Each structure stands twice: as structure tokens, then as C-alpha cells.
Length: 353
Image (cartoon, rainbow, N blue to C red; front, side):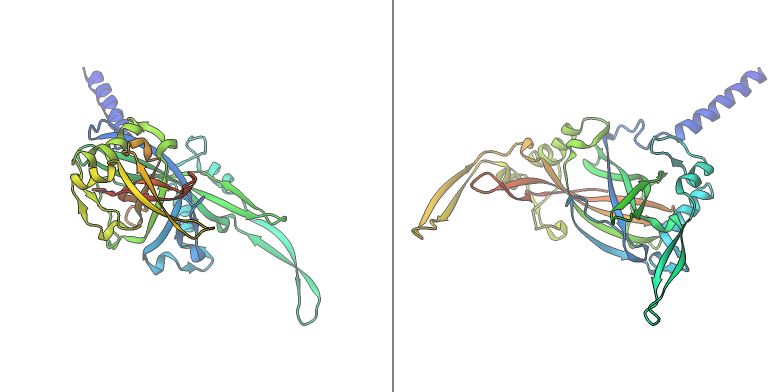
């Protein structure tokens, strides 16, 4: 009997450990959809965390909080990069290879590599003589970018799109002799963002915060749970159309000062419409009136979404965290030849995150 109880206790303790490793959406009926995306951000001077727009998908970024101690260099060490690498080498971070396998400290050290020693010629401006100088380069100082992996998820109870950072990967960038840059993605470092925590850049533990405005297509999102198309259709089309969610008017790029609109106004925006265009004849300089009939908008008319997000570096948990502020379906505006002129948000749905 004692052996049985000991065995039962052992199994239950292991079960608890395994359960604690399950993702936050596991057995959470409120979360019906999870998708995964990746993108790259680059470090500014003095190791500031900056999001540089990759392929113009992120159209605008701005810093909303910047602690001076998060940007200053201490000797030859950079705060964010050095802090993260130290945590990794002190075995206080879970690190995975690019093939998603756990890595040991020796494997991590080998991946980072040793300092490279090179000789370079320097010309003395006074004597006009060349001399050889030995230059030692620490590979950590060449970490100039990070790849971010984040999960998007839909909360049925809140009827809201939310996000969480899952991991970041340091990228070593080295300039080659021909002037090109060599990029090496090292490994994935686990980030544990508390999905229940209400992140705020006024929190004293948040030492850095950034805002990004991105144009995203969720067609290429890696689906982790649920149905992507159905979820997005409910979020940005069916719920606003049926008055099941709070909708804000399109107030330019940033919806902070946007006024709420009711279900009738939403349906007017989605309904068929007629536009009168006045075209100037370049030869006769006479104006001609053209009637353009726009069909009723369907969900498939929205190929892209505009997402406003906040990003935080939480010092208390030593993690990078993300938070969705709003999402808006983008309508393609075309010229008379059918070419894309620009995209504009029809309205915005505010996130409860």
C-alpha cells in the first residue's frame, strides 16, 4: 500500500509539472483561436530597442517610454543585450535551437562563438605612415537585431484580439569585406509574458515601451488553435455588423481620439454606395462627371488589417511583452485603372487587453 501511495505521489507530482508547462490557452475555453507570427526588430544606437519597419509592413513606430538606464552603455557592455546573454549563460533562461531543441550552456557558448582577432592598417595623419593594429571583436557586440515570435489569440468572453510574446532570437550581424552584411540567427530565448497582467508603461518596472502601427495579412499566420478566417470574420466584420462589439470611427492613423459609432453607422459603411467623380479632360480642360457604384462590402474585401500595438520590457519578469490596442479592417482604394492607391481603415475595434 505504501509503495502504491509513493508511486501515486510521484506520478501526480510529475503530472503537475507537465501541466504547468502547458501553454496558457490549454483547456481555456475562452480562447478559441491562437496564431503565430515572427518579425525582426533592430537595435538603435546605445542599444535602444527599436522596431525598424521590415518591408514597409510596419509603417510607424514611436517610443512612449525610455528609461535612461535602459539605453546607456556601462563600460563596453550594452544593457539589454548583455543582460539577456548573462541570464542565458547563468542558466536562468530556457534556450532552444532553431530546430526547437533545448540547448545546454556549452552548446549556447559554441553558438555565440569566441572573440575574433583581426589586424587592420591605420594611417597616421601627421607622419603619413601606416601601422598595424590588432582589433578584438566580441561577438556579443555584433548582436544588432532580434527576431520576435508572438502569439495572437482571440478571447471569446471579451470578444477581443490579444497578443503575447513567446520567444526572441538574437541576430548577429557582421559586415563582410565586400560591404554586405552577414546575418546569423543564434537561438530562441523563451519569454514568459503573464497573459493576466495588465501592462502599462507607467509601471515603474517597465523600463522601455514602444508603439508600432502595422499593416498585417493574417493569411500567412501559422495556426496554433482554432480557425483563423472564422475568428477574424467575427472580430472585424460580423460582430461590428451585428452590434456585438464597440466600434470606433476611422480617425486617421491613431484611434485614440476616435469617437464610437453605433451599429447603424457601421452598416452604412459596409453597404453599397455611389460616388460621383469629377474628371478633368487634359485636352479640352472640360469637367466630366462619372458615377462609380461601389458594391456592398464583404469580409473577403479586407485582405489586410491595421494593428496598433504597445511593447514593453518588464524588468520585474525580465521579459518582452506585447499588447494589442486596436485592429481595423483595411479597404483597398484603387484608381480608375484598378491600381492600388492606398489602404484606409474602415473603422477600428478596440482591444480589451
